[in-house]
Amino acid sequence: MNNFDRSEHVYTSDDFDEVIKDTLRFFNGTPVHLIPISERFHGTGVYALYCTSKSGIYSKFNLINRTAFHMPIYVGKAVPKGWRQARQASSPDIESYELSNRIREHSRSINAGEGIELSDFSCRFMILEGKESDLIGTVEAALIRKYQPIWNTLIDGFGNHDPGRGRYEQAKSDWDVCHPGRSWANKCRGVHRSREELLESIEEFLGELEEDV
Amino acid sequence: MNNFDRSEHVYTSDDFDEVIKDTLRFFNGTPVHLIPISERFHGTGVYALYCTSKSGIYSKFNLINRTAFHMPIYVGKAVPKGWRQARQASSPDIESYELSNRIREHSRSINAGEGIELSDFSCRFMILEGKESDLIGTVEAALIRKYQPIWNTLIDGFGNHDPGRGRYEQAKSDWDVCHPGRSWANKCRGVHRSREELLESIEEFLGELEEDV
Image (cartoon, rainbow over all chains, first blue to last red; front, side, top):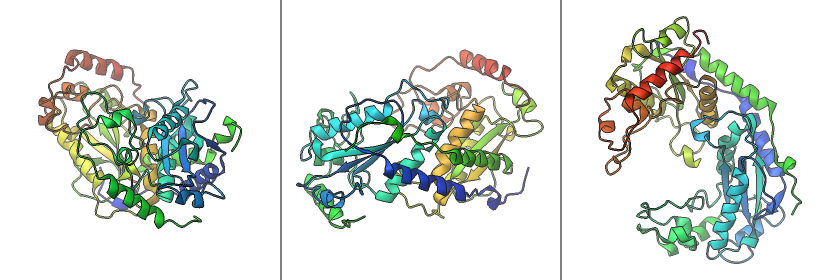
């Protein structure tokens, strides 16, 4: 056994930094598609949703994303089954549609939500499979830290699922308060935040964004 | 907008593979300490617990880990606060003791658990902070996939926390059935698995391990 020296345990890697930068460059070079994407496709990975609404509370995004898709409104990931327990083999599960399904689920949420139009939304995505699937959490985190997308940071709950029977005592999420419409969210009975306050905070947040990111 | 071509979205990286191999080499070169570690230390990262018990159900580990710490019994991570939402800045939080605290919590669990002796357990850990903290999940997953530690794979629940008041209707975890003693686990009232079956499955699992990994 050893004497304790913290510095012997600290790992640093410049190469890792380069890998992450490379994933972000790749991500920002992937094609953008309107949602829902008509094709279904296999795989897991990371995606970003972009809003280009010309009117309403998110109209600032039309200015920001006018010339290119600079600023996502939401970033998320779709991981392989068993990922949280790290139990899966690293071979790609060719029968899985996690990423495709997740983006479709988001299309349904946006379609159901008040005050937003599905035709104003598009997405970018990056498939990470095999050993690269280990990068999914890291790339998602790096994108969120870089862009601070409003539905990841200020307004919580867009990515939520139906909590299920027996769990509707919880409060409606911020997102569901701002954009009511998802049927399961309407069942949540907890005390939620004020819609007026949330909408004001969105305006303030977007007001501070620069148009060219 | 674009036509759909899946291949344009698939990211691959040989450099990433090298980074992961490098983290595992570093990890396996870090000093091993008996637990609990007497010093408290700052930081987040990944750790492995090793058993060197000479008797009892885990005595196979004494053979395996006799000459070097080849085979962990458990691998885990301690992440920065706010990590799951990726909201934190990447600057290290020098006031945090997540990794140190997590290893101490495990020492208490082992100390409370029947059929195991705390003095038979040691640990290895790797601090990942700043931008390297993005590697935590990846390194944990790589270690679990490589070693398939029995308390991560076959026997679930070692890393669980007290579920808290109002949630004791759930079943005792496999780990708590095999090693009863944690006071909160004893409050869980759900139907749990049979202790005899679990202990048999441990014997079978360890019987199949090679002594020199």
